[in-house]
Amino acid sequence: MKTTTDGSTSSSTAPNAQRFKKIVLGAVLILCVALIVGFVWWPRSLTDLGKHENMITAGVYSHWQAGDVVALVRHAERCDRSSNPCMGPADGITQAGSDTAVVLGKAFNRLGMSNTDVMSSPLQRTVQTSFSMFGKASPAQAWLSTCEHAMLDNLLSHKTPHRNMVLVTHSGCISTLEKELGFTHAKTSEYASTLLVSIGPDGKPKVLGFINYPDWASTLDKRP
Image 1 (tube, rainbow, N blue to C red):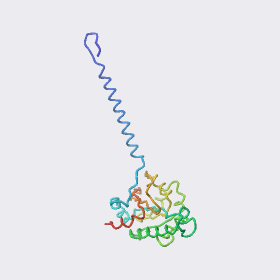
Image 2: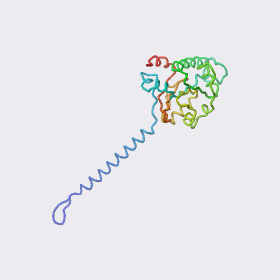
Image 3: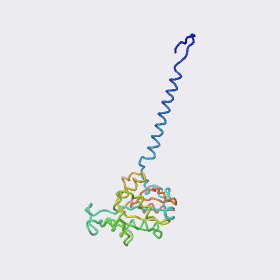
């Protein structure tokens, strides 16, 4: 409070209040921007499609029927990282891994394979996994083993509209795609796990979630 020359008083609190409001509004604006940026760029967690009704909620069955799905399958148990008997060469999969792949192949056959293309990495463990799944060799694609970059671009360039695509590949390749799409790799994913992505009519990918092979049977039993 101060006194003017004519004896009246005036307050300096009004300008101070205005400055305070500006400071608060600026801080709120910065916080909002930070939250928006964090929401957009912070990696999201994958939905476990083997839990609850998540397969139905995510629309996996309708997308599969429309031929919109890309399924990235991690190869089965590696022979060189296990004490289990090998199926064949040391750079391939174990016999237990082959049995797992057979079970996984049956799950995909329950989904329906008439409208589906299958490709695999050319490495022995993925070739064997694919063969165990479907009982025949599938076309080998080098980009499914050397996929540190441009995984999404390669996927989109090989996807045929209205046809599903099963890609037997590696955890590193799957992680690369997840990162490109803004997701963190699921810590609970296992050998022979599957990442499911839909490609809409506009060509834009949408991550549906992942599923571990033991959960396929019970999940498919809930299929509408």
